[in-house]
Length: 414
Image (cartoon, helix red, strand yellow):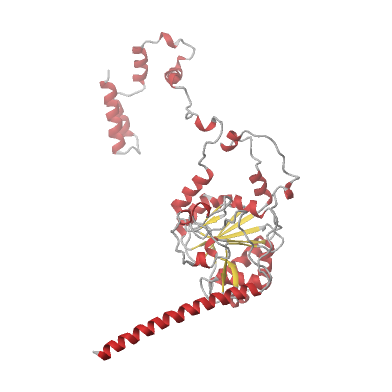
């Protein structure tokens, strides 16, 4: 008995010692990581001073006063807003990585239609929409081949490329606004920056953006399939490898927060970000983020660019809430008008009489009995109708019975 108690006591002590050693190692590794990060020259660019997108487009922007109500309701008089100008001069190619073909249509129908070019990329499979299929040996190989295809097929029209998965919702208009102060010919790498063992990269969970200059740098280093294969061998780490390779060329993640310190690229959906406690405080999204992240109302920039974890039905919902739903804040009439009808209600019977050849005659002189007889002539006698329906092809049994029943009710009304 004493031996068993001694053995149990020894096991508890050994377990406690293991926990202490594990905790000490975790603290040491975290300290080492911070030392590695701070011992280097700061890898992040110094954030440029706030710049208006108007500066590079001052020669094409014309200011004029418009009716806010008409603008909100899509009047054809206003087709050259600031967003329209940016769409024309800042080209966004959206690259969507596919794992589930059922989600492609929701992307194409909603936010994908606002990209200048939309590309779906996936592993060999059967897809309902055109998809670039890539056979790869690792996730980095897959991404590297995607970048090579993008460069070889579209480098002349490439300004900025947004890379997301099919479960993400993006707002291309806000991306254009953000990058309008940057020169796409230079190398830029944007997203949600995280740190991992001395390296800094933009996590794929939140989507990331590369300028033409950055894609050109990758293409120059990895100019063959063999070079791509040698660049990384593990699956689910392509975002880390991308940051690692760009960092070795002096290209580091930008600080993409707004002036309130709120993020623009988000690795979770609205529900998880807006309600405190939805995401574990010990999760890597918080502990690895290069900058402090917030929950609740201050989680996200008013000009956010991406959200993650969005199912197809929610993609349509987000699209409606962001682009269609209006909140009344000032005067206007367009949003509070009755539904349009081709004819006023009181003139429906008059139009019927005109169609029956009574145009030019006084409607006031027509009695209710005359009106009824005109209407009755439009409807066949049940027996005649029955004969016509039997001769007519394509009428289902259910439709036939409903029409016959309606005809009998009309004649019984007399």
